[in-house]
Amino acid sequence: MVPPGPPPGHRTHSGSRPVIAQDIAQTLVDPRAYADGKRIDDAFAYLRREAPLEQAQPEGFDPFWVVTRHADILEVERQNELFHNGDRSATLTTIEADRKVREMMGGSPHLVRSLVQMDNPDHMAYRRLTQGWFMPQNLRKLEERIREIARGFIDRMAAQGGRCDFARDVAFLYPLHVIMEVIGVPESDEPRMLKLTQELFGSADPDVNRTGEELGNNANGVDTIQSVVMDFMMYFNGITEDRRARPRDDLASVIANGQVNGAPLGHLEAMSYYIIAATAGHDTTSSTTAGALWALAENPDQFRKVKADPSLIPGLVEESIRWVTPVKHFMRTATADAELAGKKIAQGDWMMLCYPSGNRDEAQFADPFRFDVTRSPNKHVAFGYGAHVCLGQHLARMEMRILWEELLPRLEAVELDGAPRNMVANFVCGPKSVPIRFKMA
Ligand code: HEM
Image (cartoon, rainbow, N blue to C red):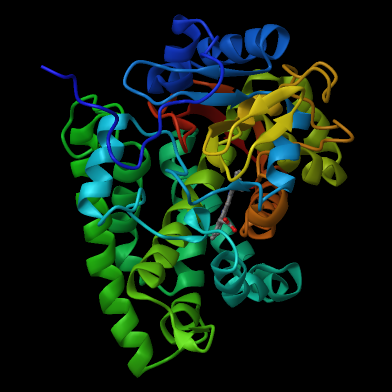
C-alpha cells in the first residue's frame, strides 16, 4: 500500500533537513516544559548558543525554523510582507490538528480570524478600527476608573488577613475587570469570561481545561478549543445584537457598528475581534502581574528598592513583562525565498518566534536571568514588534503601573507561602498560583 502523502495545504519541507536534536525539538512544543520554566529556559539558552536559527521537527509536526535571538525576531517581525501571519497556522499546531481545523473551516488553517491571523490589506484596515481606542491619549480618560478598580482589589486583598493566592485572588481578576469594562461585558459575566479564557489558553492543563486531561496539541484538543470558541461566539452574538440596537461608549459598540472598507465587519472577523480582546486583553496582563509579585517576593532587595522609590515603578512594569513574557511564541510563514542570519529560508517555510528566548538573549540583555527593576535600556520583545505589535500594550502597562502605585505604599512585607505553579501551556501562559504571606500598612 502506498503511504498517505502530506495532508492538503501542507508542504513537505524544501531544502535542508531539520538539525535541532529531537529532545530539544520536543521541549519546544511541550506545555510542561513551559510550566517547569527551567527546562524551556535551558533549551533556549542552548539554541541561542549553538543553533540560534535552525529547523526543528518535533514528532507530529511539520518542520519549522526556530528563531531564538532577539535581533532575528525583530528582523522577521519588521518584514511583515515577507513573513506572513495568516498563510499557515499563526500558533504551533500538529499536522493532525491542522488537518482537522482545515476540515472544519473549509480549507482555512484558522479557527478564528483576528488581527493575529490577518495580513495586509485586511490587517491594516481591521487594526485601524480600534487603534485609536488603545492609544495613550484615549486611555488617559480611563486612568481614574482603573485606579478605583485597583484600590477595590487591594482592599479585598488587605481583608484576607495576611495570606492569599495573589494569582487567583488579585492578578487574574483585576485585568479581567478592566478589559471587560472596556469591552462592555457586564460584571456578572466575568467569571464565565475568565473560565472560557483559561479553557482556551490552558487547553493542555488538566486543572483548567474542559476534559480534566492533559490534551497537548493533538486533534482532540482542537475539538475542545473549537467548543470554547463556539461558546465565546454565542456570547458575543448577543452583545453584537444589543450594541447594534443600543450603541454605547464601549469597544463592543465599535466592533458591532464598525465598518471596514465601507462595509460592516464579517461575522467571523467581528467574533474574533471580541475573542482576542476578551482573552489576550487580560490573561497576559494577569500572568505578568502574578509573575511580578512572585519575583518581588523572591528578590526582597528589588522589592525594597521599588517601594522606596516609586519613580522605579515603570521599570518594574517593563522588567516584569520581560521576566514573564506571557506570549511564548507566534508563527510566521515566508512568502518568498529569503535569507536570514545567513540561512536560506524557502517560500512557505514556517517560523517560530520564541519571545521568551529573545528576552533572555545575552547579546541584548546584561545578566538576563537577573530580575532588575532598574534595567535600562530594556528593549524586550514581549509585545512583539512591527505591524502586529501588541495593540493593548499601553493599556497593559497602564493597568500594571496603577496597581503597583496603589499596592506598594500599602504593602509592608511579602514572602512566598508555598511553591508557585505555572500553567501547563505553550502559547499564552504564566503563573496559575502564587501563594503569599504579606503585611499591609
Ligand atoms: C498582539 C503580547 C496585553 C491585545 C500581541 C502580540 C504579543 C502580545 C507578543 C503579537 C505581536 C506580534 O506579532 O508582533 C502581550 C503582552 C501583554 C498584552 C505581553 C500584557 C503584558 C494585551 C492587552 C490587549 C491586547 C491588554 C487588549 C485588548 C492584542 C491584540 C493583538 C496583540 C488585539 C493583535 C495585534 C495585531 O496582530 O495587529 N500581544 N499583549 N494585548 N495583543 Fe497583546
